[in-house]
Image (tube, rainbow over all chains, first blue to last red; front, side, top):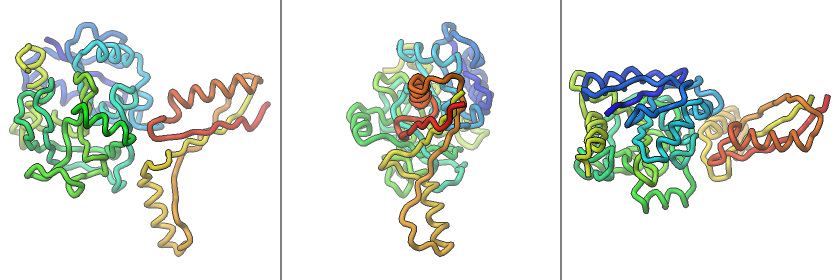
Length: 233
Length: 83
């Protein structure tokens, strides 16, 4: 099993993701520069956070056309596990691998703080190590995490169970009051219909070890590993 | 050579936090008559060629692919100069 961490110009969470897979999860991992054009050597891909191409035009809009992205899209369409974190989520949206788009935070502020997330499902490649409804504390750090899609798409995602994480209180109450950025339906993370591509704004790689003040992110990577080893679901 | 202006605007119904903030600021400046502000992008493109119909087609393709995000934005292309 090998993980790949994609590096775009302006990615800045690539090393954190690499560190977590290698040192915390103890699994093989390699960086993949965005100019490469194959992901054949990998079983799971991480699109890390950061500011690819300086967020020029729209977040993720230019990275989405990096040479590697066509291989990432083929990989995802063939059922390969892909997780996009923060800017990685924005890139997945621009690439059309996930539905919707990101708008500026409703507060217009860059927010950098821990938030609570409700795990909506625990039968997926990304959440099989959690309890259903489990509340996680994971940090966000973004200026554009205000998720938007049209009402029909939102309904379809609800019907298909594509909303994996929603912003909530410490007790798991996912009302507007606990929404940090104006995101539609408190959406913090969504999957594609097939369930092999996850995009999330919070950063699990920043809280996978006790030394960082919490390890609620650990089980997202552990779930992926579980799934790849054929243990999950 | 041709020059085109491309206007990228948020679709109706898509919230515009920037526009809201600017509206509030205009109110503070005593422009009480302002009801709504929406902020978009204005993109100028210079391109080779003389064929306006062909250029328009290309510019629309560029807008669909990259310049605008069809989930949240509309766009309008105008060819404004032919050199």
